[in-house]
Image (cartoon, rainbow, N blue to C red; front, top):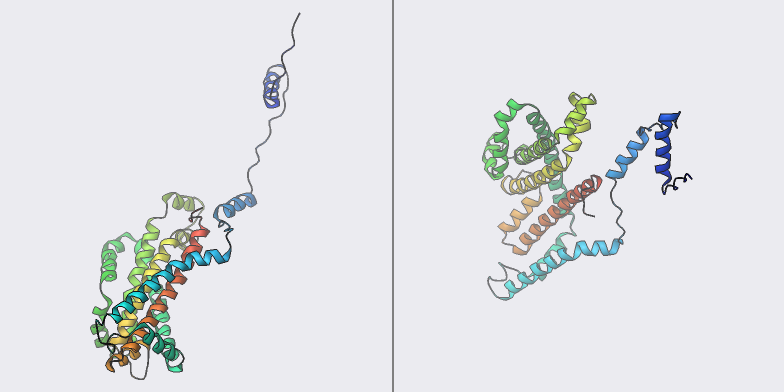
Length: 317
């Protein structure tokens, strides 16, 4: 007596078997067409891949985790400063206490002349850095695009980056006298090589596969740089901008100490006047002002860098 076949455990396997038998004995089920993902699906996957992970922690604990190492470092510096003052290492008029210095700083920041000097210094810094970014970006893009140009001036850009900015001031004074142009010249020549090198490094590390994909998609000339190369090199370019700002800020401070433009009172000029008067608390106060401005600008670059890393999914889980 013929026995019936045992029922299959999986419906999918049964359907596959029936399809195979149908191919031999009769028309089987029509094969399903594979649906190609549309533009919306692909865009959604790209957005999901690049979207930053949501941080479920509360704002307060995150701020505290970020702030307490900095507060601890400041406390250690103040403690070492106070110990050095109490030890009598130098007379109090040469090496003042933290309390005296911060009292002088508190009186200083309440004056309109102080904020006028800070405004002039920051105007010079932003103007010089903007010029350095524009020049450095053009040079970096040109050097990375044309191999003969890289062979000609690639090493020169690195040499200019490592050269101390203060070495340019004698030439700047001879060329532009004691004027704003002398300071701007040194700020730009100190920062532009770092910006150019950052862009060159970023372009060098763009994956070759991305370049081939861009070529297949018909990207040429400026569109290729605008939509593919520059966005891909952005992380390294931001690092170059950060380094360029550090060079431009140091060059500016050296310039304001060495090149005193008649009729202008900047932070560097006020610090030099305090040094001429042997007012050590005021000198240290201006040092702290320059330090705080540098830290604040660095935090802005860190915010931009962190936002970029989150955008590209490069942060830790």
